[in-house]
Length: 175
Image (cartoon, rainbow, N blue to C red):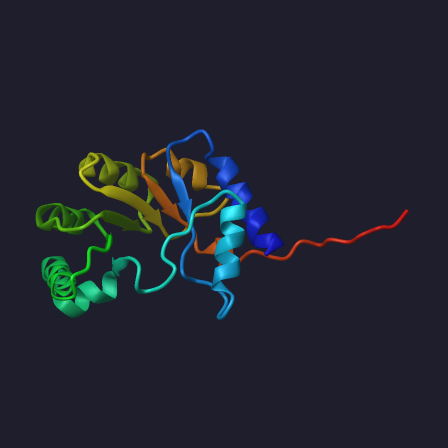
């Protein structure tokens, strides 16, 4: 937990003067997710989804299985209506063509740009023009997080906060 909190603090520090939130992911250690997410918060970053029940994410596999973005989003809207839910919905897009379709279909909360190169990410954020929340994901490191944040995205999700943090080497010396 010390390593997760420290790594989270390093990420938060890199973007502290920018209007962006660094998010964790569900990529956590089985049975101790609650502790790892707590450590992320202690480090100054934010928790995203705790589980599959509190926010809906439509990823590339879902889009492909449904036959495209529009049918995937429509199925989620039908599911929410049938189950009397009002959960946030993140839609992952892989390119500007998918982004155009996402903007047309709507019915989502956030658009997640997966593994976009920086110039393309900047263009995508400008294209959304605050109509939806925006999120960058994939390939974000401590070395590029500031540049990603400078594209204007609202959120940056970083799985490494929990799955790649290493424990701190701590000792106690008695004098």
